[in-house]
Length: 613
Ligand code: AGP
Image 1: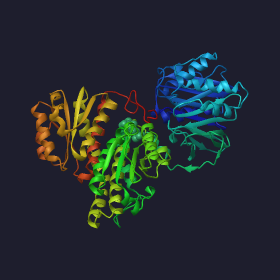
Image 2: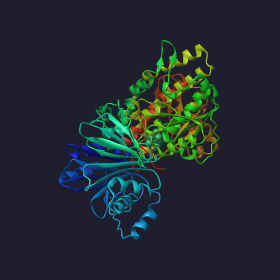
Image 3: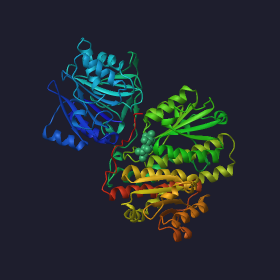
Image 4: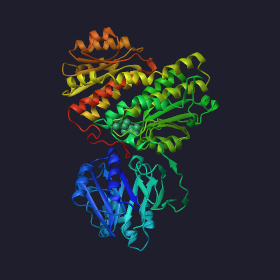
């Protein structure tokens, strides 16, 4: 979950690497570092804290050269201080390494290397890599061979980029397992390497991705890719369609705020080219689904983490209701340990914004191993979760930078709805009128979301009321129960206020004991089939002195008379209501965190892509 950038070409490497790292800070921001080859010697700058600190250091102590590598860290082993920052260098100072992943056997390797006389300068697992490379270089092999031999010692999943002063015309990169991607970008007489596309997008859109157990020798002229055992691989070069500007904040204070407001466009894009309103048809061609295959499906497992898992919970209701296929939602970190019962007719559907979440990828691998059909709903183009699936749906929302996921939550809700309609259609269980009506409802979505966003001022007013709260409860039922989980997750991850999402019907079995005047209760009570039940929930909370904030449908007088504050949403078809009800909760979390003066886009202890188990 760290960010890596490397450059080789005719330009000054330092600003290119620093700018690239800035785009990857969402992957980690505990410390940062940079190594550049200057007049035949490796020059190193590293500092604790965010990238700005490194930039200041580089400004006071500049370094220039045409080849270099950099890193922004999310600490796993060793405190986030300057000595643990990457790049790591060995005894000779001739080789530097940046690493993403965990060297699971680093203790054994450290002992082994220490016995050979190696002195360690950090507490990290990553430092073992550079010492192993130096061990092999000292036996007169070239850098590529030394890296290859080193990889043979490492347990776990890794993305590694290496630079040596003795072979200044190249950078060596490698990927083993799912520790985040390694993408190589091709320019004019210059080549880039990074852990994610946004880092290099302003320079080139022509990219290729390393698969697991592949290495690349990167030169100004391009990249030579081989498998770890030396077999040549022909790179598949893809042209990325993302606009680099969409990875900038623009007029907004934070990426999260920008991404919340981008949802009208993001949802329009996720529908674009898929829904044919004239023929009342939905097409998801990348799923590679035939009527025969669709009819064979006996069960769907949805697997994902965090926000993506909440989207999956809504997806379960949509698919079961519309397509009548049983669906189970499994948290991805548990999936591979739960010995799931999978058949060749079972679909395992992974949902992931990054497409690089280690737990989700491990769940997909388990599904592959057990012979299930493997699908994914993914935002990051070309990511592992997209590549290894038999079929996929691309969210088409553009890059999401804020650690708190917003547009990559609502887009998969719409994708899951489309999937449910396609499945029902192919299985022949949907009559024409029902299909027409379901598809007609989809067209409403961008406008409904826009109307929620127009009510931001109301949300700010409620945020002022709740900003000093210490703990809160989010309640929902049915299709809006996962929205209670999601609202609570949004609040806790960026505002550090304890928030618990709960199925409203479970309140009376324990949590109601918590309710008093200091405990805001956020109740999802739109006009859906559970509306009446939610009204009695509000009454129960009020009877215990609880302060109720309701998310309710415009014009709902009963809610207006019962709740202390109401976040109004426009009336929406109930199967699509989560797309609407989540918007005020995203804005509420954002404004509370912002009023508390917190770092909204880079909350403490978190990273955007969680590429470790
Ligand atoms: C969302 O706000 C969180 N930051 C987090 O739960 C996230 O959704 C989770 O880590 C899954 O990420 P993915 O979608 O990239 O797989």
